[in-house]
Amino acid sequence: MNHDAYDNAYIAGILNSVKTIAMVGASANDVRPSYFVLKYLLAKGFSVFPINPGQAGKEILGRMTYSRLADVPEPIDMVDVFRGSAAVPGVVDEVLRLDPLPKVIWMQLGVRHDEAAARAEAAGIKVVMNRCPKIEYGKLSGEIGWTGVNSGVLSSKKPLMRPGFQSFGVRQK
Image (cartoon, rainbow, N blue to C red; front, side):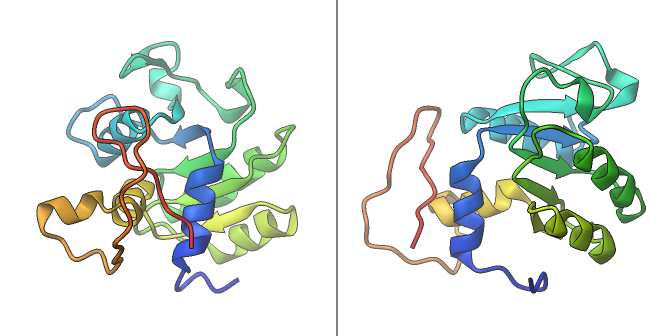
């Protein structure tokens, strides 16, 4: 797969299919980007499990934090990686030991590791690199346009409302 550009349908398909997300590198510090993304995804109805060994056993935004992916008490649909690119091979190793396997490994902005992505894809896991699910959700749902940002997505269709505060669903083509 070409990881330099993603079709909107590919991203929308992922965001519409996942329900549980494990966020590796989640922070309890309310000024860190991972904290904002965790808060946003929770508000959109996703079940998010923070993964941070330094915070294990404590809560972040009311969600119990776990030391590692294997400690999460239910199947994970997507692993969101908020760690540096050098940490990705170890995260992918941990993901490949899970049963069942997650559907998606999503690497945040600035995070890319092509070899680790190839191993995940060989196991049947979809991979997104150098993207943020918060930004992509906002772009595809039309929410990002509320602030005057050109999302590049035009639609005359009435937004599909989901439960939650100002929660639009992500449209698929």
